[in-house]
Length: 147
Image (tube, rainbow, N blue to C red; front, side):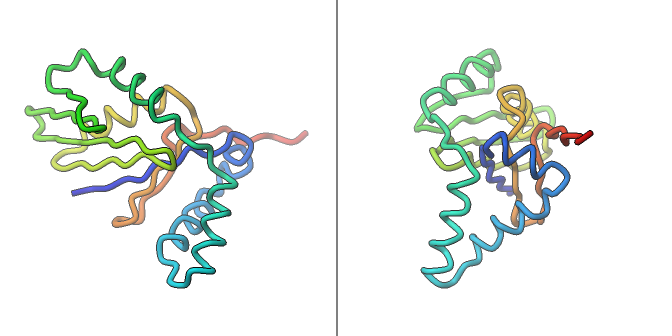
């Protein structure tokens, strides 16, 4: 099973870190691995500073609106679930104030549908799969060119 954490990065931070995604990943990884309360507290503050809270109610309504037409989509118990039987793909998305959690198994078709829906909403969602060490923007952020 794959697990992605997706964070809504503030637009100005996303612009500054376009092309420097490894630095963002390192911050989130250090926070996840922090052993000491003081260290975790400091890293939590840094993450809070660079992220925007997710409005759970609005995000859930948006996803229901976008995926409600799928026969194999359901929203219950505060979770979205999509199954694509032809490709043996299953994904569940949970919206929280701090982050979105996506769990998927089988092929990546169902998770890709969720990624596409969220990508349309804003360019500054940063997804991380800590297990595989994969990370990146759902929608690549354009680097500012200074003239």
